[in-house]
Image (cartoon, rainbow, N blue to C red):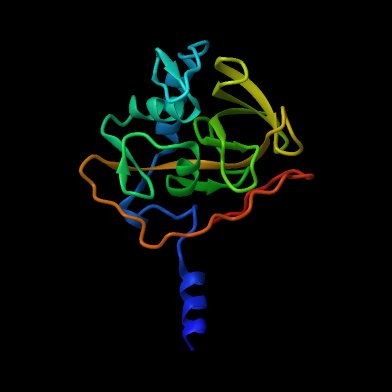
Length: 202
């Protein structure tokens, strides 16, 4: 009986793509996403600095968070310990993104990339489709190039040893919001795609 109860609880645990309202988070609007992208584009060629969160230097999550903070000044993020001003790319994916299908993504939405099947290691902000559903343009703070760049990426296969893991619309909390994850959960395995990736509707 206890094993059955545990199984039911595990099935009911939250996933990374929860809708607005869960945990008291709000989802940014498409307009806010586009505004954040405009701020990010102004930072093209800014230096890459691990942990950087300003025009003096960005890392990948730092550019995303800074860009959205220019639109929503009191934005804070959810993380496993609680509320944080800065989180990793993996925490953006796990706690702060409403996962999107390829048909739903708009300029400014989050792009998640990885070289590890267990965690998200890189990301940026979607700009436009080059080949709809197959190849896209995005801006990111790249350790490979050593600066903020506009790059292209395929939804299938590998690019420089990394692969596309999904799109997401930012979920956020406003300052002074109390947040704790109700239940810790294991993220789905992030597999290397051999065919075009279409993230299912949540």
